[in-house]
Image (cartoon, rainbow, N blue to C red):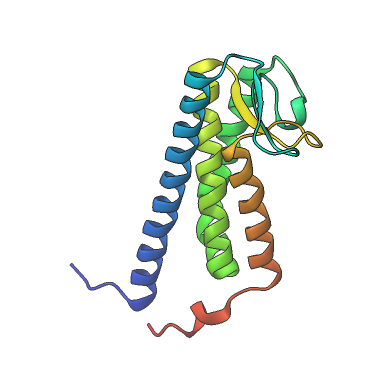
Length: 166
């Protein structure tokens, strides 16, 4: 068995970090949705501040309530997106550096969190309500922040990876 090069070790560590962050996102998403399901009735809303509420709703569509009632189609689309993300993860992390890797981890964790809802419940549980935006969840937040992170990494790449000796 040959020894790993420095770049291979770097990628192995980065992969472990991506999977750890994605797993943390999935666990936090699952725990938050379980807490909402246990402590709220469907449709119930409680103010936390004057501008932020916890509101238990379900969404059978996609973002912003589009494509309602198309769970099977949305599930297939989610699996295609997950496959494309996994396929492109190395390239995104190579070109996007830290921000690309962080973005991949957040999008992966968020997508898995929402896919688990679709598989188990046939819909996605949402509860974060700012009253000026559609109600959403932690997985949605992770997907949005992850997409922004990937864009930052691709627009302002970290060139330190090319400096790793073989």
